[in-house]
Every structure is written in structure tokens, then in C-alpha cells.
Image 1: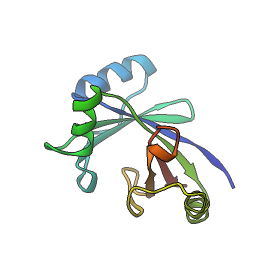
Image 2 (image 1 turned 30 degrees about the horizontal axis):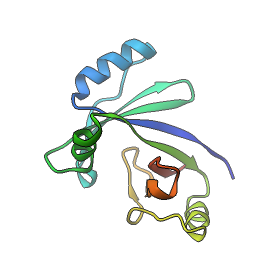
Image 3 (image 1 turned 60 degrees about the vertical axis):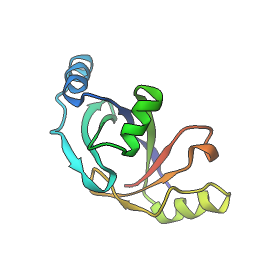
Length: 131
């Protein structure tokens, strides 16, 4: 089983300004911003080394990202780990009592993802992504 860091997600209140900053910082071009309707978020990715930074901007009011921004003012939202044994890893985590936040769904990269409750993961929201 190979598990690696896929991306670090950052909640922002202005995705265009954030893209400009991280493009300057990384000297890489970001992806186009795209809407993930199910999660009510606009997302863009910027490569940095072997991983990426995902910028998350709320799409509408009273969404998970808008709530995060109002409580915390932005910042790191979650870490995403990619695995080549998605179903097996989900079951292993759940069997140890780690709660998922719903069922798996299709994420921003078109791959299956599932989130795990930060109360069970040392106060860090964890996204598991199928590789």
C-alpha cells in the first residue's frame, strides 16, 4: 500500500487574490477555478513539488467553507492523503473507531474521496483520496 500527501487545502475568502499570491510564491501557474457543486465550493490547485495546494472559496452562504471562514478567518482546512487501496484504507480507519463525515463521493480531481472527523484525527480534518 502506498499512501502519500496529495494536497493541503486552504480556505480563502478571495480565491483570485489567493491564486495570485501562491502563483508568485511557488512560481507555478494555478489550475482554472472550478465549482464543486456537491461541496458548495470553488477550488483551484497549484503544484508545489510532488504535492499541490488546493484553494477553497465558498460558493454561497452557509456552506462548510463559509462557516470555516467565519469561525477561523481562513487558513489550512484539511490534509488530503492519496492511497492506492482506497476501500481497504477506509475500512481500516473505520475499524479503529475513526468516524467518517458521510460516505465517499467524487472530489475535485474526479476521484473518490472521503473525509474523517477531526475529533478523531488529532483536530485535523483528513481527506482520503483514491489514487
